[in-house]
Length: 117
Image (cartoon, rainbow, N blue to C red; front, side, top):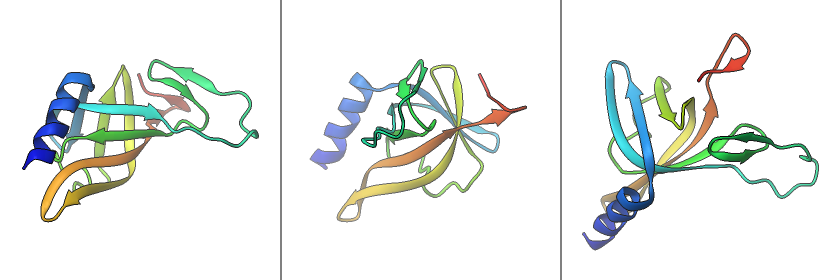
């Protein structure tokens, strides 16, 4: 379908390289990852990462329909821009019966109190 092809072209052209790992299967894709933006003034001191400014350490992922991160369970690891992220919520966006893309909320993976790099 035309929508799927257009989204795939945009992801390939403008997306950043990302690795999605579930179990022993690791797949490279192109996706958009951006910090979650807050409009509340209570977050006055944002942190800065290589992906941009972030208030709470949450990121939005928009990627291809495969790998279907919305169906892979809680053991999904997303690696991008030198960071490692866990999927906290994911959903596929469909048009009719065709999956167009997946979106997810990512949270940095922590080890010993610090975000993994």
